Amino acid sequence: MRKNTLFLLLSLVLGLSSCEDKGQEDLQEYLIAVPLTMTADEFINSIDVVSPLPTKDSGKIYAYEQLIFVNDKYLGVHVIDNSNPSNPQKKAFIKIPGNVDIAVRNDFLYADSIRDLLVFDISDVDNISLINRLENVLQNNVRWPFEADVVDYNGFGNGEDVLVGWELMTERLSQSEFDSRFGIVEGSPFLENASADDSSGQGGSLARFKIVDNYLYAVDSHFINIFEISDLSNPRDMEDVYAGFDIETIFNRGSHLFLGSMRGMYIYDISNPSIPEFVSEFQHGTACDPVVVDENYAYVTLRGGNNCGALESGLFIVDISDISNPELAISYPMDEPYGLGIKGDQLFVCDGASGLKVYDKTNIEELVALDHFKDVVTFDVIPLESTLLMVGEEVLYQYVYSEDGLDLLSRLNLN
Image 1 (cartoon, rainbow, N blue to C red):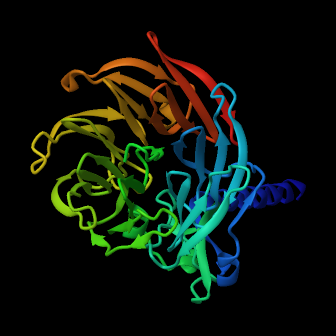
Image 2: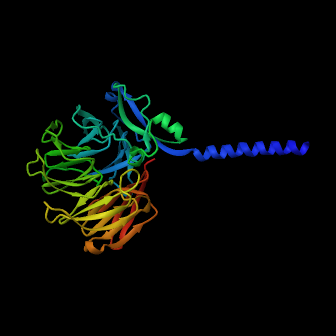
Image 3: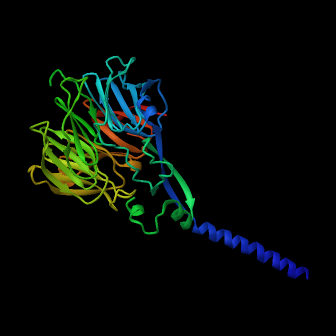
């Protein structure tokens, strides 16, 4: 009798354990994007300049004279005093909800805040001030994160709150729980593809803002937003130009704009700066990509995975000697490339967790690897005249050029 009782108890325990294991096996891990919102009043009144703050999600970098600006995605801009490049100092933080990019001309800083264009006077870095705000002149660049499996819109969308960013959360859910919350069935495509006196700054290859002469060009997913800025404190909103689909970056060379998109590279002529005209395009399928350009070639990094569309990542070199007919010259495999930059015969590629890769591009048919910094996570890079700036995982790096390659000059923790 005791043996039978023990057997029944053991069977019950094993049965429960088996059910728990089965239940655990049915759970899947999802990366969920939760909207971050503000009321309309909070949004309008939230612009501020405060003491330095830790970085939450370091984004693009921008260099202007002795200053470096680092975007904190959707939150604002960190201001760094780089008068001593070997010891840069965090100076201030400009709170700008929904901000993803900036550009600077002659001490005037232009920044996006959702659909508004803001103008700051930065002539006195200790007293940065907002001097103008053009409302509803931009498209919304707060796009759902490519890496997310799904967006949780619960509680958002009443028409009163303003979407200013995203928070990513990981949850383990069963298929039925997931379907119940999000109404998405297994196999859903959403989950599968979830002048000489003028002084302007320099952005990286991931920039959405670009100043050319007296014009500021700001791209969103479909349009080139154009502003005439001969009166720097009072930009004039010009007619937007429809430019394509899923545009992500902008680069300028001479009288042409090069737009990087998830579908390819679009080239526009700005001989008439207020009315960019389409010249040509290079299609590469679907992937996340920025672009930089030299005399005869455009260098495009394609990042596959993470819902960017493509399965593989790589560096594409496009022959633009005939600007009306760009053609692929050669491609090289990469791991997870983001930004890139060029200086002289050198090409710098930020290959994500695989580090910074430096090549001699004298012969594009056979790129020569000059250096590989494997111990850093890289995101964007700006090759300046005497130094190279690079932002990684909440760290700002500065290197000096030497006969042996690059020597680390300083490392600033942004947190």
